[in-house]
Structures are given as C-alpha cells and as structure tokens.
Length: 171
Image (cartoon, rainbow, N blue to C red; front, side):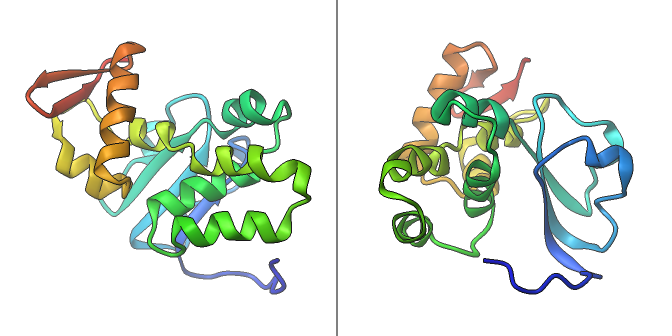
C-alpha cells in the first residue's frame, strides 16, 4: 500500500490510470530524462506526449480488465505494464504479491491481467522498423514470450514483419 501521499517533484515513472487526466494536468511535469510515461488509453496520444527525453507506452488496460475481470478495474493491469516496462519489481514478486494481498477468488484472474503484456509490446513497435532485440530491450519482455506476442499482433493485423525479425506498426 502507498502510505506517503506527499507531492512528488521528480520521478522516473509516471503511471496514468485514466487518460482523461491528460487534459487536466501536465502529467509529464517532473518526469526525469530517461523516464517512462505509461498511459492507459485505447488510442494513440497526441504527439506532444512523445519525446526523445522519455519513453511513452500506451496500454489499453481498460480493455484487458474488461476482457479478463469483467470490470474496468485497471490498477493490476497497469501495475503489470509497469513491471514489464521497468526493472523495479520482478514479475515473480508481483505475482507473489497478488497471492498474498488478494482474496483467493480474485487471484488467478488478476495474475492473468498482471502478465498481459501485448499492449506494452505493441507500443514499442513504431512506424520505423525495429528488430526483435530493440523491442525486447524496450519492453523488457523475455524473448520467447515476446516472439509469441509479435506473432499474435501480426496475425491480428496490428504489425508486420518487413524483413527477418524487423517489425513495423500498421494500425
């Protein structure tokens, strides 16, 4: 649980659970160079949210939560995206926390939400070709799982392999 509710002046990560906040405040204020902006959204963000100074990831956590949990509760999905986009917490520790903190009837579904990284991988693939190693480095998703996600995204028509192990976004 978060026990310190003081104002944060500088941070390495910004996690936005509700994209409507982007209209209310500048969520990038205080984000350190090399930081990560992680936003729950079904849409691409305006260009001003993409910068060489920080990485921007878009995760449709609401859709993931609705599909898996049957409710638009995005905190576990966004936590999973943060785990995948950072080296702050190993996935195993995050899964153990779900086992420890959640009621038994909620555990399995929340662990499935936590492990869903398709959106994070998709947000790492851009309009310019990126190879698998670049995508793996940016998403921090293990290669075997990454390859499975890339194949799924390609079959769904979201990305295309333009040459051996180089992918671009097409949607």
